[in-house]
Length: 302
Image (cartoon, rainbow, N blue to C red; front, side, top):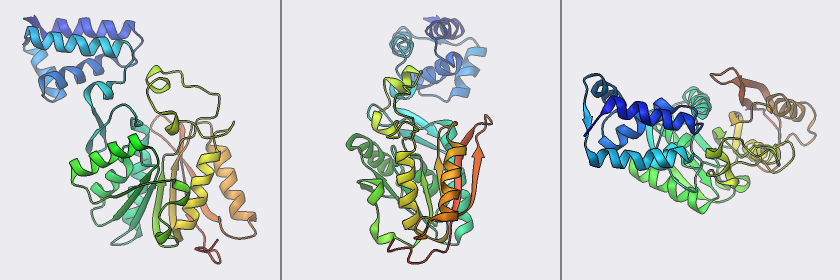
């Protein structure tokens, strides 16, 4: 048997040497996974001088080895924390990030302000994170989600079932999703692929393990897919409905400019927006655009 404190120190040093950004927190999470206890209990046991059995230490060693090769922490444990939820994730689905929790929060605020039974659509739901968070925190909402990838939609279905959520999940293209809801949705939210073509992520966890379908925005500026999502949102939303979309920290100015230009000059009035505002994440970086659907003519038939 080995002392927990020393095991943690050695494991954290190994991860730090491998370039893992948060070695201490990752070791605590992996130990909590091995011991099936809360992270706070891991730290308590470390203080009181608890020990690991040989079997526990071997299991932890295997996980530390995988993490040192930059396998995502969430792939090793099979779980990701998102707002108040614990989601199941793994190979084939985008691991939800902390910054997306803020995006979900904006959608939740908009849904709560929309009325007693808001209709919310999540375009490109991945693991289902945003849609499930909205359904969890706005219980009266009718929440719909769409995902294209076979693997990702399987993870989303698993999460919907595990959480007993009322989210209606479908597989298909975001650009054509939910035609029966056109003109009647209160909130559309999306975390679409937005990385510019050719800008390969530096972090191995993203570059080597997140699916490309969830990463790249389809053009040199990365905005082709986000703008297609915005066009779909315009058709789904009722007049006054709210659109919330995550973007790269370098895209806020350009995306806001495009949406405002559509508001000012689109002759067909099909994709018109008002109150276009960009929001910063907790690190102070531009992260999400929020816009309101103007009262255009012939909206549903555009």
